[in-house]
Length: 465
Image 1 (cartoon, one colour):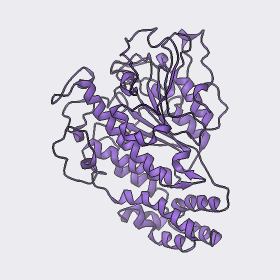
Image 2 (cartoon, helix red, strand yellow; image 1 turned 30 degrees about the horizontal axis):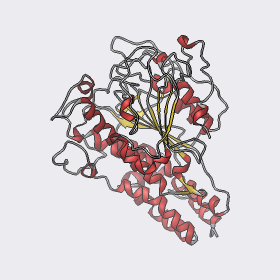
Image 3 (cartoon, rainbow, N blue to C red; image 1 turned 120 degrees about the vertical axis):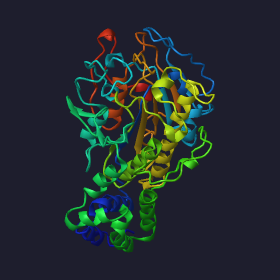
């Protein structure tokens, strides 16, 4: 039985922690009443510099590098189970959730153009004119994270976090948009993200109190005690699962020494990763903040950008012991005996280490008859499509989660190549995500004029349960 629920919510409504704790208390109340709140959530992890499709294929799939020209790829649709296959090296961190992993190759995105980065087009499935430096001159429409944010709403309909190669960049506008020429911000400084998200929901003296505290748990200390006192045993235990994620924000030290399979002989000295100049520290911190934002109900749509956008695609991952930038790697560069494809895999694996950490945190939080992970979909892709100098013949993606069984997961899917019967586009994938969110839309972005004889509407029915 949920004890003193009205008193708890009434007290919180007048306290500094109301915005943080009320969504959590409401979920516990709904669970106790047998009417669980199961909001759908979407997370986009966008890495710069392309993802070669053969590098995310599971064991037993002989997928040769495709030439960058039309009519490439398999002639027939490929659909195999992952149950008896091993994930590739870079995806191994999510092996424990293999039944929730869907690897998708073959989706075309030619309308986006290509280059070192497709910028907003990557999540928008539209075209845009380009300046001499390759930068987008116009944003032709909404991106999928923006569209989902409009549909799902929230305290913050959309939160964008990430890193830039330039420490002086506090905010960049590079991959997410609310609509035509309405870019959404990506906050690049973890300290600013922390203060913006958690400090901005406090008002008056509470706002000053938050600024003076080292972390959100200290700020909420008195409210947490009051809330716990009014909860029954089962709900009190579940409440503790929510609070564990805020403990992560208390630990601001680098976790790089725990990351395996890098080239480092000795890890960097532990530092405050919220202020670190090491790009992997900052990305680690942004994943922590993003997880906390999801778990406490601040947003239902989160975009995590790893130096995506034309201004940052040549970032160097020094935190992984690499002193070669991603642009040089893309041109076939090697480092300490590792070839370009091995270097790509090392960097991608670090991203999946972070994704695995996010999944673990969501899985630890009860929700309805399952956990928050059951109601969350994570989509990994690159703003650079299929190559360093992409032409967008195809756009590899990894989808993690199944939204309570609504998506057929645990599979490797490969659509026929561009222009061949059965080819589908990234726009079809984005319509699929909208349908999973409860939208009735059947189109997204711009149709490819060279595929005018193809039906470019509707979701990828093969992915839907």
